[in-house]
Length: 509
Ligand SMILES: Cc1cc2nc3c(=O)[nH]c(=O)nc-3n(C[C@H](O)[C@H](O)[C@H](O)COP(=O)(O)OP(=O)(O)OC[C@H]3O[C@@H](n4cnc5c(N)ncnc54)[C@H](O)[C@@H]3O)c2cc1C
Ligand code: SF4
Image (cartoon, rainbow, N blue to C red; front, side):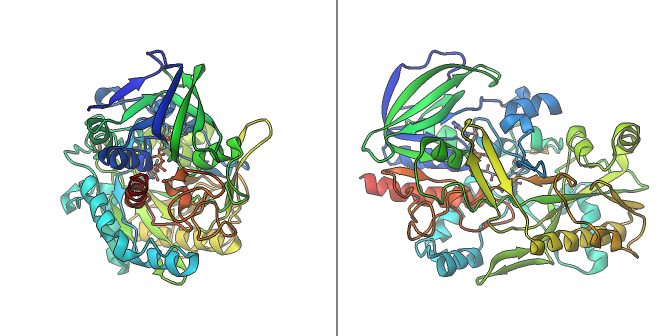
Protein backbone atom coordinates (compact mmCIF):
# COMPACT_ATOMS: atom_id res chain seq x y z
CA UNK A 1 0.00 0.00 0.00
CA UNK A 2 1.40 3.39 -0.98
CA UNK A 3 1.37 6.27 1.50
CA UNK A 4 1.01 9.97 0.79
CA UNK A 5 2.29 13.49 1.34
CA UNK A 6 -0.54 15.86 2.25
CA UNK A 7 -0.07 19.60 2.70
CA UNK A 8 -2.50 20.70 5.41
CA UNK A 9 -2.25 24.34 4.38
CA UNK A 10 -4.20 23.27 1.29
CA UNK A 11 -6.29 20.32 2.42
CA UNK A 12 -8.51 20.15 5.47
CA UNK A 13 -7.00 18.09 8.28
CA UNK A 14 -8.85 15.09 9.64
CA UNK A 15 -10.77 15.92 12.82
CA UNK A 16 -9.25 12.98 14.65
CA UNK A 17 -6.92 10.20 13.66
CA UNK A 18 -5.53 7.00 15.18
CA UNK A 19 -2.20 5.52 14.12
CA UNK A 20 0.26 2.99 15.44
CA UNK A 21 3.35 5.24 15.24
CA UNK A 22 3.41 9.02 14.98
CA UNK A 23 6.80 10.53 14.08
CA UNK A 24 7.36 14.24 14.71
CA UNK A 25 9.78 15.75 12.18
CA UNK A 26 10.71 14.59 8.68
CA UNK A 27 14.43 15.41 8.73
CA UNK A 28 17.45 13.14 8.99
CA UNK A 29 16.21 11.29 12.07
CA UNK A 30 12.46 11.32 11.39
CA UNK A 31 12.55 10.33 7.73
CA UNK A 32 14.95 7.46 8.47
CA UNK A 33 12.74 6.24 11.33
CA UNK A 34 9.59 6.49 9.19
CA UNK A 35 11.22 4.54 6.37
CA UNK A 36 12.53 1.82 8.71
CA UNK A 37 9.25 1.43 10.62
CA UNK A 38 7.10 1.49 7.47
CA UNK A 39 9.37 -1.11 5.86
CA UNK A 40 8.75 -3.30 8.93
CA UNK A 41 5.01 -3.08 8.29
CA UNK A 42 4.16 -0.45 10.90
CA UNK A 43 1.45 2.12 10.30
CA UNK A 44 3.34 5.43 10.30
CA UNK A 45 2.21 9.05 10.24
CA UNK A 46 4.82 11.83 10.11
CA UNK A 47 4.00 15.38 11.26
CA UNK A 48 6.14 18.10 9.70
CA UNK A 49 5.68 21.79 10.31
CA UNK A 50 7.64 22.84 7.22
CA UNK A 51 6.43 22.75 3.63
CA UNK A 52 7.82 21.03 0.57
CA UNK A 53 10.18 22.79 -1.82
CA UNK A 54 12.09 21.16 -4.65
CA UNK A 55 13.69 22.17 -7.95
CA UNK A 56 13.01 25.69 -9.10
CA UNK A 57 10.89 26.44 -6.00
CA UNK A 58 14.32 26.83 -4.45
CA UNK A 59 14.91 30.24 -5.96
CA UNK A 60 18.46 30.93 -4.67
CA UNK A 61 17.17 34.15 -3.05
CA UNK A 62 18.48 34.58 0.51
CA UNK A 63 15.50 36.28 2.14
CA UNK A 64 12.81 34.11 0.60
CA UNK A 65 14.67 30.86 1.24
CA UNK A 66 15.49 31.60 4.89
CA UNK A 67 11.84 32.41 5.37
CA UNK A 68 10.75 29.20 3.73
CA UNK A 69 13.35 26.67 4.81
CA UNK A 70 14.66 27.67 8.26
CA UNK A 71 13.29 27.55 11.80
CA UNK A 72 12.22 31.04 12.90
CA UNK A 73 13.11 32.20 9.37
CA UNK A 74 16.81 31.80 10.19
CA UNK A 75 16.55 34.19 13.15
CA UNK A 76 16.72 31.69 16.02
CA UNK A 77 19.45 32.37 18.56
CA UNK A 78 20.55 31.73 22.12
CA UNK A 79 18.94 33.88 24.80
CA UNK A 80 22.02 36.15 25.08
CA UNK A 81 22.10 36.59 21.27
CA UNK A 82 25.60 35.05 21.15
CA UNK A 83 24.95 32.12 18.82
CA UNK A 84 22.72 31.88 15.74
CA UNK A 85 20.97 28.51 16.06
CA UNK A 86 20.39 27.38 12.48
CA UNK A 87 17.92 24.56 11.79
CA UNK A 88 15.98 23.40 8.76
CA UNK A 89 12.20 23.50 8.59
CA UNK A 90 10.97 21.65 5.53
CA UNK A 91 10.01 18.22 4.26
CA UNK A 92 13.47 16.62 4.63
CA UNK A 93 14.49 18.92 7.52
CA UNK A 94 18.07 20.09 7.79
CA UNK A 95 19.06 17.83 4.89
CA UNK A 96 17.41 20.34 2.54
CA UNK A 97 19.58 23.27 3.59
CA UNK A 98 22.76 21.70 4.85
CA UNK A 99 26.23 21.84 3.30
CA UNK A 100 26.23 18.14 2.33
CA UNK A 101 29.41 17.23 4.21
CA UNK A 102 29.36 13.58 5.20
CA UNK A 103 31.47 12.75 8.25
CA UNK A 104 30.56 9.42 9.88
CA UNK A 105 30.50 8.84 13.61
CA UNK A 106 33.89 7.40 14.63
CA UNK A 107 34.71 4.26 16.60
CA UNK A 108 36.43 6.45 19.22
CA UNK A 109 33.27 8.44 19.87
CA UNK A 110 31.20 5.25 20.12
CA UNK A 111 33.72 3.71 22.53
CA UNK A 112 33.64 6.93 24.55
CA UNK A 113 29.84 6.63 24.74
CA UNK A 114 30.20 2.99 25.81
CA UNK A 115 32.86 3.41 28.47
CA UNK A 116 32.02 6.86 29.87
CA UNK A 117 28.27 7.10 29.26
CA UNK A 118 27.20 3.47 29.67
CA UNK A 119 25.73 3.10 26.16
CA UNK A 120 26.96 -0.45 25.76
CA UNK A 121 24.48 -1.18 22.95
CA UNK A 122 25.90 1.48 20.67
CA UNK A 123 29.21 -0.30 20.06
CA UNK A 124 31.31 0.23 16.94
CA UNK A 125 30.71 -3.42 16.03
CA UNK A 126 26.92 -3.12 16.34
CA UNK A 127 26.73 0.20 14.52
CA UNK A 128 29.21 -0.62 11.72
CA UNK A 129 26.53 -1.92 9.31
CA UNK A 130 24.25 1.03 10.13
CA UNK A 131 27.07 3.48 9.48
CA UNK A 132 27.72 1.79 6.14
CA UNK A 133 24.00 1.90 5.37
CA UNK A 134 23.87 5.63 6.16
CA UNK A 135 26.73 6.28 3.73
CA UNK A 136 24.96 4.22 1.06
CA UNK A 137 21.66 6.06 1.63
CA UNK A 138 23.51 9.35 1.24
CA UNK A 139 25.31 8.11 -1.91
CA UNK A 140 28.39 9.40 -0.09
CA UNK A 141 31.23 10.11 -2.50
CA UNK A 142 34.43 12.15 -2.61
CA UNK A 143 34.54 15.35 -4.66
CA UNK A 144 37.51 15.34 -7.02
CA UNK A 145 40.44 17.79 -6.72
CA UNK A 146 39.03 19.55 -9.79
CA UNK A 147 35.74 20.13 -7.98
CA UNK A 148 37.41 22.19 -5.24
CA UNK A 149 36.45 25.81 -5.83
CA UNK A 150 39.03 28.57 -5.31
CA UNK A 151 38.02 29.12 -1.67
CA UNK A 152 38.55 25.45 -0.82
CA UNK A 153 41.71 25.21 -2.94
CA UNK A 154 43.18 28.19 -1.04
CA UNK A 155 42.67 26.43 2.30
CA UNK A 156 44.25 23.28 0.87
CA UNK A 157 47.20 25.36 -0.42
CA UNK A 158 47.61 27.05 2.97
CA UNK A 159 47.63 23.63 4.68
CA UNK A 160 50.22 22.29 2.26
CA UNK A 161 52.47 25.30 2.78
CA UNK A 162 52.30 24.95 6.55
CA UNK A 163 52.69 21.16 6.33
CA UNK A 164 49.49 20.41 8.26
CA UNK A 165 47.02 17.59 7.69
CA UNK A 166 43.91 18.19 5.66
CA UNK A 167 41.47 16.25 3.52
CA UNK A 168 38.66 16.53 1.01
CA UNK A 169 35.41 15.58 2.75
CA UNK A 170 32.83 13.13 1.43
CA UNK A 171 29.54 14.66 0.35
CA UNK A 172 26.03 13.53 -0.62
CA UNK A 173 25.80 15.39 -3.92
CA UNK A 174 25.07 13.58 -7.17
CA UNK A 175 24.80 15.65 -10.35
CA UNK A 176 25.95 18.87 -8.67
CA UNK A 177 26.59 21.79 -11.01
CA UNK A 178 28.33 23.94 -8.40
CA UNK A 179 25.79 26.75 -8.08
CA UNK A 180 27.07 27.34 -4.54
CA UNK A 181 23.66 27.79 -2.92
CA UNK A 182 23.47 24.60 -0.83
CA UNK A 183 22.59 26.52 2.36
CA UNK A 184 19.39 27.84 0.79
CA UNK A 185 18.42 24.64 -1.04
CA UNK A 186 19.51 22.99 -4.26
CA UNK A 187 17.57 24.04 -7.38
CA UNK A 188 18.98 21.01 -9.22
CA UNK A 189 17.84 18.47 -6.61
CA UNK A 190 21.41 17.20 -6.48
CA UNK A 191 21.46 16.49 -2.74
CA UNK A 192 20.79 12.89 -1.82
CA UNK A 193 19.03 14.02 1.35
CA UNK A 194 15.95 12.58 3.13
CA UNK A 195 13.65 14.47 0.74
CA UNK A 196 14.88 12.37 -2.17
CA UNK A 197 15.82 9.09 -0.48
CA UNK A 198 14.15 8.18 2.82
CA UNK A 199 10.86 10.03 2.26
CA UNK A 200 9.96 8.53 -1.15
CA UNK A 201 11.02 5.11 0.19
CA UNK A 202 8.83 5.56 3.29
CA UNK A 203 5.85 6.69 1.19
CA UNK A 204 6.28 3.69 -1.09
CA UNK A 205 6.00 1.49 2.02
CA UNK A 206 2.83 3.16 3.20
CA UNK A 207 3.97 6.04 5.45
CA UNK A 208 1.85 9.20 5.43
CA UNK A 209 3.36 12.67 5.77
CA UNK A 210 1.34 15.70 6.88
CA UNK A 211 3.01 19.02 6.05
CA UNK A 212 2.37 22.35 7.78
CA UNK A 213 1.40 20.27 10.81
CA UNK A 214 3.03 21.46 14.03
CA UNK A 215 2.87 19.18 17.07
CA UNK A 216 2.39 21.39 20.13
CA UNK A 217 1.67 18.99 22.98
CA UNK A 218 1.57 15.31 23.80
CA UNK A 219 -1.02 14.20 26.32
CA UNK A 220 -0.97 10.91 28.19
CA UNK A 221 2.76 10.27 27.94
CA UNK A 222 2.49 7.40 30.39
CA UNK A 223 -0.68 5.85 28.93
CA UNK A 224 -0.97 3.22 26.21
CA UNK A 225 -2.64 5.69 23.84
CA UNK A 226 -1.17 9.16 23.56
CA UNK A 227 -2.87 12.18 22.07
CA UNK A 228 -0.85 14.64 20.04
CA UNK A 229 -2.29 18.11 19.71
CA UNK A 230 -1.43 19.47 16.29
CA UNK A 231 -1.86 22.94 14.78
CA UNK A 232 -2.04 23.43 11.04
CA UNK A 233 -0.24 26.38 9.45
CA UNK A 234 -0.86 28.57 6.43
CA UNK A 235 1.06 27.98 3.19
CA UNK A 236 3.89 30.33 4.21
CA UNK A 237 4.14 28.66 7.61
CA UNK A 238 3.70 31.99 9.41
CA UNK A 239 0.28 31.61 11.05
CA UNK A 240 -1.63 28.83 12.71
CA UNK A 241 -4.98 28.25 11.07
CA UNK A 242 -6.56 25.14 12.59
CA UNK A 243 -6.00 22.20 14.86
CA UNK A 244 -6.61 18.48 15.13
CA UNK A 245 -5.49 15.56 17.28
CA UNK A 246 -3.71 12.32 16.55
CA UNK A 247 -4.02 9.30 18.79
CA UNK A 248 -0.91 7.13 18.67
CA UNK A 249 0.38 4.07 20.46
CA UNK A 250 3.98 5.09 19.90
CA UNK A 251 5.45 8.58 19.45
CA UNK A 252 8.89 9.07 17.91
CA UNK A 253 10.36 12.55 18.31
CA UNK A 254 12.86 13.62 15.67
CA UNK A 255 12.12 17.32 15.49
CA UNK A 256 15.78 18.33 16.12
CA UNK A 257 17.76 18.68 19.32
CA UNK A 258 15.93 21.86 20.29
CA UNK A 259 12.35 21.08 19.26
CA UNK A 260 12.25 17.48 20.57
CA UNK A 261 13.18 18.71 24.06
CA UNK A 262 10.83 21.69 23.66
CA UNK A 263 7.89 19.40 22.89
CA UNK A 264 8.63 17.15 25.88
CA UNK A 265 8.95 20.17 28.19
CA UNK A 266 5.76 21.75 26.83
CA UNK A 267 3.99 18.43 27.48
CA UNK A 268 5.42 17.91 30.96
CA UNK A 269 6.89 14.58 29.87
CA UNK A 270 10.16 13.17 31.17
CA UNK A 271 12.55 13.77 34.05
CA UNK A 272 14.70 16.72 35.15
CA UNK A 273 17.33 15.95 32.48
CA UNK A 274 15.03 16.90 29.60
CA UNK A 275 16.40 20.07 27.99
CA UNK A 276 19.77 19.86 29.76
CA UNK A 277 23.12 18.81 28.29
CA UNK A 278 22.56 20.68 25.04
CA UNK A 279 25.63 20.95 22.88
CA UNK A 280 25.51 23.59 20.12
CA UNK A 281 28.98 23.16 18.61
CA UNK A 282 29.25 26.92 17.94
CA UNK A 283 31.38 27.65 14.87
CA UNK A 284 33.54 30.74 14.46
CA UNK A 285 33.82 32.27 10.96
CA UNK A 286 37.09 33.87 9.83
CA UNK A 287 37.23 35.74 6.52
CA UNK A 288 40.07 37.08 4.38
CA UNK A 289 40.67 39.39 1.44
CA UNK A 290 42.80 38.23 -1.46
CA UNK A 291 44.19 40.28 -4.36
CA UNK A 292 43.03 37.60 -6.77
CA UNK A 293 39.33 36.94 -7.32
CA UNK A 294 38.05 34.06 -5.16
CA UNK A 295 34.32 34.10 -6.05
CA UNK A 296 33.67 31.78 -3.16
CA UNK A 297 29.92 31.86 -3.85
CA UNK A 298 30.56 29.66 -6.89
CA UNK A 299 31.20 25.92 -6.82
CA UNK A 300 30.85 23.38 -4.03
CA UNK A 301 30.86 25.49 -0.86
CA UNK A 302 32.45 23.34 1.83
CA UNK A 303 34.66 20.47 0.74
CA UNK A 304 38.12 20.81 2.31
CA UNK A 305 38.89 20.37 6.02
CA UNK A 306 42.13 20.93 7.92
CA UNK A 307 42.09 18.13 10.47
CA UNK A 308 45.55 18.57 12.02
CA UNK A 309 44.23 19.84 15.35
CA UNK A 310 41.20 17.61 15.76
CA UNK A 311 41.46 15.32 18.78
CA UNK A 312 39.67 12.04 18.85
CA UNK A 313 40.03 9.64 21.71
CA UNK A 314 38.09 7.13 23.70
CA UNK A 315 38.72 8.84 27.04
CA UNK A 316 37.42 12.29 26.16
CA UNK A 317 35.54 11.81 22.88
CA UNK A 318 35.84 14.41 20.16
CA UNK A 319 37.91 17.51 20.92
CA UNK A 320 40.42 19.98 19.56
CA UNK A 321 39.15 21.85 16.51
CA UNK A 322 39.15 21.72 12.77
CA UNK A 323 38.97 24.31 10.05
CA UNK A 324 36.82 24.07 6.95
CA UNK A 325 36.18 26.34 4.02
CA UNK A 326 32.65 27.64 3.77
CA UNK A 327 30.54 29.08 1.04
CA UNK A 328 27.97 31.76 1.34
CA UNK A 329 25.34 33.70 -0.47
CA UNK A 330 25.49 37.52 -0.05
CA UNK A 331 23.04 37.48 2.87
CA UNK A 332 25.06 34.96 4.85
CA UNK A 333 28.35 36.70 4.13
CA UNK A 334 27.07 40.15 5.09
CA UNK A 335 26.07 38.72 8.47
CA UNK A 336 29.57 37.40 9.26
CA UNK A 337 31.60 40.42 8.13
CA UNK A 338 32.98 42.77 10.77
CA UNK A 339 31.65 46.06 9.42
CA UNK A 340 28.27 47.75 9.19
CA UNK A 341 26.73 50.68 7.30
CA UNK A 342 28.90 52.38 4.65
CA UNK A 343 31.93 50.37 5.73
CA UNK A 344 29.97 47.15 5.43
CA UNK A 345 28.81 48.16 1.96
CA UNK A 346 32.39 48.89 0.94
CA UNK A 347 33.47 45.46 2.24
CA UNK A 348 30.64 43.75 0.36
CA UNK A 349 31.83 45.49 -2.81
CA UNK A 350 34.96 43.35 -2.41
CA UNK A 351 32.82 40.20 -2.17
CA UNK A 352 34.48 38.52 -5.20
CA UNK A 353 37.87 38.80 -3.44
CA UNK A 354 36.70 37.36 -0.13
CA UNK A 355 37.51 33.91 1.21
CA UNK A 356 36.07 32.41 4.38
CA UNK A 357 36.62 29.48 6.68
CA UNK A 358 34.84 28.13 9.73
CA UNK A 359 36.50 27.02 12.97
CA UNK A 360 34.58 23.96 14.16
CA UNK A 361 35.10 23.41 17.87
CA UNK A 362 33.37 20.30 19.32
CA UNK A 363 31.90 21.37 22.64
CA UNK A 364 30.63 19.91 25.88
CA UNK A 365 27.01 19.87 27.06
CA UNK A 366 27.01 23.56 28.00
CA UNK A 367 23.50 24.52 27.02
CA UNK A 368 19.91 24.06 28.01
CA UNK A 369 16.55 24.18 26.24
CA UNK A 370 13.77 25.70 28.34
CA UNK A 371 10.13 26.53 27.83
CA UNK A 372 9.13 29.65 29.77
CA UNK A 373 5.80 29.89 31.56
CA UNK A 374 4.54 32.00 28.63
CA UNK A 375 5.26 29.00 26.37
CA UNK A 376 8.21 30.79 24.78
CA UNK A 377 11.28 28.77 23.80
CA UNK A 378 14.55 29.76 25.42
CA UNK A 379 18.01 28.40 24.60
CA UNK A 380 20.76 29.14 27.13
CA UNK A 381 24.42 28.46 26.48
CA UNK A 382 27.69 29.37 28.20
CA UNK A 383 31.04 28.31 26.77
CA UNK A 384 33.60 27.44 29.48
CA UNK A 385 37.09 29.00 29.44
CA UNK A 386 38.68 25.89 27.95
CA UNK A 387 36.36 26.12 24.95
CA UNK A 388 37.01 29.87 24.54
CA UNK A 389 40.72 29.10 24.45
CA UNK A 390 40.13 26.59 21.65
CA UNK A 391 38.32 29.34 19.70
CA UNK A 392 41.41 31.53 20.04
CA UNK A 393 43.71 28.66 19.05
CA UNK A 394 41.49 27.84 16.07
CA UNK A 395 41.24 31.50 15.00
CA UNK A 396 45.03 31.77 15.08
CA UNK A 397 45.45 28.58 13.08
CA UNK A 398 42.89 29.79 10.52
CA UNK A 399 44.67 33.13 10.26
CA UNK A 400 48.02 31.45 9.63
CA UNK A 401 46.47 29.18 6.99
CA UNK A 402 44.86 32.11 5.18
CA UNK A 403 48.05 34.16 5.18
CA UNK A 404 49.99 31.09 4.01
CA UNK A 405 47.52 30.88 1.12
CA UNK A 406 48.28 34.50 0.15
CA UNK A 407 45.64 36.58 1.98
CA UNK A 408 46.21 40.35 2.15
CA UNK A 409 44.02 40.82 5.20
CA UNK A 410 42.30 38.48 7.67
CA UNK A 411 39.17 39.54 9.54
CA UNK A 412 37.39 38.18 12.60
CA UNK A 413 33.99 39.77 12.83
CA UNK A 414 33.99 40.39 16.57
CA UNK A 415 32.84 43.67 17.98
CA UNK A 416 35.19 45.53 17.75
CA UNK A 417 36.57 43.59 14.77
CA UNK A 418 40.04 42.07 14.63
CA UNK A 419 41.71 42.93 11.34
CA UNK A 420 45.18 41.55 10.72
CA UNK A 421 47.58 42.21 7.88
CA UNK A 422 50.23 39.63 8.79
CA UNK A 423 50.60 36.43 10.78
CA UNK A 424 53.54 37.92 12.69
CA UNK A 425 51.46 39.30 15.54
CA UNK A 426 48.34 37.42 16.55
CA UNK A 427 48.09 38.91 20.06
CA UNK A 428 44.82 40.64 19.12
CA UNK A 429 43.29 37.16 18.96
CA UNK A 430 44.64 36.33 22.44
CA UNK A 431 42.72 39.33 23.73
CA UNK A 432 39.36 38.07 22.43
CA UNK A 433 37.00 37.42 25.34
CA UNK A 434 33.96 36.39 23.22
CA UNK A 435 31.61 38.33 25.49
CA UNK A 436 27.89 37.81 24.78
CA UNK A 437 26.66 39.08 21.41
CA UNK A 438 30.09 40.22 20.22
CA UNK A 439 30.94 37.39 17.82
CA UNK A 440 28.89 35.88 14.96
CA UNK A 441 28.98 32.28 16.22
CA UNK A 442 26.87 29.84 14.18
CA UNK A 443 25.40 26.57 15.43
CA UNK A 444 24.39 23.96 12.86
CA UNK A 445 24.92 20.76 14.86
CA UNK A 446 22.75 20.80 17.98
CA UNK A 447 22.88 17.63 20.09
CA UNK A 448 22.22 16.16 23.50
CA UNK A 449 19.10 17.79 25.01
CA UNK A 450 17.38 14.47 25.76
CA UNK A 451 20.49 12.51 26.62
CA UNK A 452 20.54 8.72 26.30
CA UNK A 453 21.78 7.11 29.54
CA UNK A 454 21.56 3.73 31.26
CA UNK A 455 19.55 5.13 34.20
CA UNK A 456 17.12 7.97 34.79
CA UNK A 457 19.57 9.44 37.29
CA UNK A 458 22.03 10.06 34.46
CA UNK A 459 19.94 11.13 31.50
CA UNK A 460 16.55 11.71 29.93
CA UNK A 461 16.05 8.61 27.73
CA UNK A 462 17.15 5.01 27.93
CA UNK A 463 19.62 3.53 25.42
CA UNK A 464 16.70 2.45 23.19
CA UNK A 465 15.60 6.10 22.99
CA UNK A 466 12.57 5.65 25.29
CA UNK A 467 12.08 8.81 27.34
CA UNK A 468 12.31 8.01 31.06
CA UNK A 469 8.94 8.22 32.77
CA UNK A 470 7.03 7.97 29.50
CA UNK A 471 5.51 4.93 27.88
CA UNK A 472 6.48 4.48 24.22
CA UNK A 473 7.66 8.05 23.67
CA UNK A 474 11.01 7.82 21.88
CA UNK A 475 13.69 10.23 20.69
CA UNK A 476 15.50 9.25 17.49
CA UNK A 477 17.45 12.37 16.61
CA UNK A 478 20.68 13.90 17.92
CA UNK A 479 18.87 14.95 21.12
CA UNK A 480 19.96 11.63 22.59
CA UNK A 481 23.69 11.94 21.83
CA UNK A 482 25.55 12.16 25.16
CA UNK A 483 28.46 14.04 23.59
CA UNK A 484 29.10 15.60 20.24
CA UNK A 485 29.06 12.78 17.68
CA UNK A 486 31.10 14.23 14.86
CA UNK A 487 31.93 17.61 13.38
CA UNK A 488 28.92 17.02 11.11
CA UNK A 489 25.77 15.38 12.40
CA UNK A 490 23.74 14.18 9.39
CA UNK A 491 25.47 10.79 8.91
CA UNK A 492 25.56 10.01 12.68
CA UNK A 493 21.83 10.78 12.97
CA UNK A 494 20.98 8.52 10.02
CA UNK A 495 23.11 5.78 11.59
CA UNK A 496 21.60 5.92 15.08
CA UNK A 497 18.02 6.54 13.94
CA UNK A 498 17.96 3.45 11.72
CA UNK A 499 19.44 1.30 14.47
CA UNK A 500 16.95 2.50 17.09
CA UNK A 501 14.00 2.29 14.68
CA UNK A 502 14.86 -1.33 13.81
CA UNK A 503 15.02 -2.13 17.51
CA UNK A 504 11.64 -0.49 18.06
CA UNK A 505 10.10 -2.33 15.10
CA UNK A 506 11.35 -5.64 16.51
CA UNK A 507 9.91 -4.81 19.90
CA UNK A 508 6.53 -3.87 18.45
CA UNK A 509 6.52 -7.23 16.65
C1 LIG B 1 23.07 25.51 7.75
C2 LIG B 1 23.35 24.08 8.14
C3 LIG B 1 24.38 23.40 7.52
C4 LIG B 1 24.65 22.09 7.90
N1 LIG B 1 25.62 21.39 7.24
C5 LIG B 1 25.80 20.07 7.53
C6 LIG B 1 26.71 19.29 6.76
O1 LIG B 1 27.33 19.77 5.81
N2 LIG B 1 26.85 17.98 7.11
C7 LIG B 1 26.19 17.43 8.16
O2 LIG B 1 26.40 16.25 8.44
N3 LIG B 1 25.31 18.14 8.88
C8 LIG B 1 25.09 19.43 8.57
N4 LIG B 1 24.15 20.14 9.26
C9 LIG B 1 23.44 19.48 10.37
C10 LIG B 1 22.36 18.51 9.94
O3 LIG B 1 21.66 18.98 8.82
C11 LIG B 1 21.40 18.33 11.14
O4 LIG B 1 22.15 17.85 12.23
C12 LIG B 1 20.28 17.36 10.84
O5 LIG B 1 19.50 17.82 9.79
C13 LIG B 1 19.43 17.20 12.09
O6 LIG B 1 18.54 16.13 11.88
P1 LIG B 1 17.22 15.96 12.76
O7 LIG B 1 16.49 14.81 12.25
O8 LIG B 1 17.59 16.01 14.20
O9 LIG B 1 16.43 17.31 12.53
P2 LIG B 1 16.10 18.08 11.21
O10 LIG B 1 16.77 17.48 10.04
O11 LIG B 1 16.38 19.51 11.52
O12 LIG B 1 14.53 17.84 11.04
C14 LIG B 1 13.62 18.22 12.04
C15 LIG B 1 12.30 18.55 11.36
O13 LIG B 1 11.31 18.62 12.37
C16 LIG B 1 10.42 19.65 12.06
N5 LIG B 1 9.79 20.08 13.31
C17 LIG B 1 10.36 20.72 14.36
N6 LIG B 1 9.48 20.91 15.34
C18 LIG B 1 8.32 20.37 14.92
C19 LIG B 1 7.03 20.24 15.52
N7 LIG B 1 6.77 20.70 16.74
N8 LIG B 1 6.05 19.64 14.79
C20 LIG B 1 6.29 19.15 13.54
N9 LIG B 1 7.50 19.26 12.94
C21 LIG B 1 8.50 19.84 13.63
C22 LIG B 1 11.28 20.72 11.42
O14 LIG B 1 10.50 21.56 10.60
C23 LIG B 1 12.29 19.89 10.65
O15 LIG B 1 11.94 19.73 9.31
C24 LIG B 1 23.87 21.46 8.91
C25 LIG B 1 22.82 22.15 9.52
C26 LIG B 1 22.55 23.45 9.14
C27 LIG B 1 21.43 24.17 9.81
S1 SF4 C 1 26.49 23.46 -5.17
FE1 SF4 C 1 25.62 21.58 -6.06
S2 SF4 C 1 24.41 20.65 -4.40
FE2 SF4 C 1 24.84 22.78 -3.79
S3 SF4 C 1 23.04 23.90 -4.49
FE3 SF4 C 1 24.53 24.02 -6.17
S4 SF4 C 1 24.08 22.28 -7.54
FE4 SF4 C 1 23.02 21.94 -5.59
